[in-house]
Image 1 (spheres, rainbow, N blue to C red):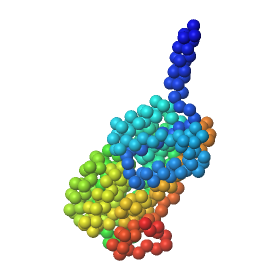
Image 2: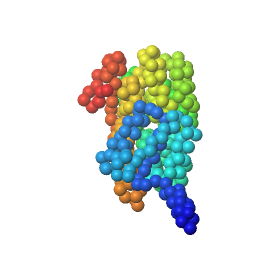
Image 3: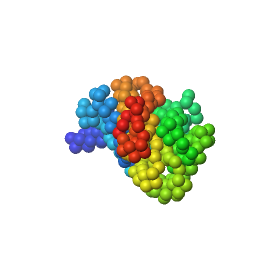
Image 4: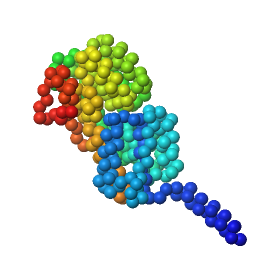
Length: 315
């Protein structure tokens, strides 16, 4: 009789553990690939949670980090793991992680960062019908306008511009379309090359720079992020300045940017996650990234003989 009761109790406990495999609060952090720029967003996110009392490993709270190293099937597997262990929410960085988490997260709340507006990511038809489980911080494409005008200010005689874009990334394709319109209005000849992965960057750059453009603009593209040092080295050899909309890329060798601070982006997303964890009955609405900053690389500025006034942050 005792053994039967013990066996019955073991079965019950096993069933309960399967239904509730996790104690406390857990956030699954879904990163698409290893990248210094994206890591700043990850750090900002964790710092914001810590500032709100959510420190991984303390008070029954944990952050489970998964990095797909640029492999989409691995990204899907990581998301499936988060759903299997029933994390409280998923933090997604960047766009491809957000899309994966929304599509495979089985309704688990998804906090996005380093992502465009859900409409631009192809997650909904309009801004009135965002996915119901999605919150976090997004960016519009207004940064392209300000970035191009900034480039025109620093290189007044610019007549030609080169860009790379990932043909499989929605935000990259849309950014290129907007760039074409702006360049046409400013009478700038735009040269572009499409790629599918970061391993194709070097060959595409060598081909494109044969046309001797006056500048290169780094679109917000995961493949560009992953191979940015290759882009900078190739442009440096041709004495071509590199512009971008991402402050993190200035640290990595771009001349200048007027755009998002990745740490701030992650921090703002972390504040949204903290608000949700404190009150799970209310899911925050996705919000626009707050503010942009002007940054210039000190070494590159000296090379191109540019002077930065007090409105610039020098790296």
